[in-house]
Length: 72
Image 1 (tube, rainbow, N blue to C red):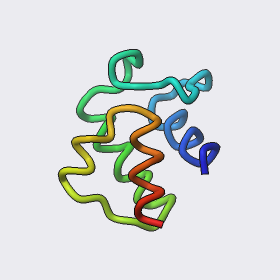
Image 2: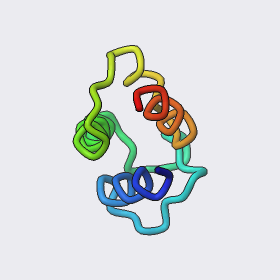
Image 3: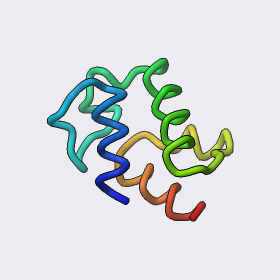
Image 4: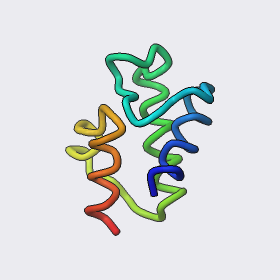
């Protein structure tokens, strides 16, 4: 699952160096527009739908992974 998440994040943020430490605070490309694209692409990749509260929480790789795990 981690590699699938990272694959999506790397594509959305156009950065092949993104790893598990990635967050809104240390990734310049992670702005509000890219956040929405990330959420949409993750929903497509994992065939899930996120609630608005979950979307607001998903500000780093760890939380993204936790929210997706809770949906599967």
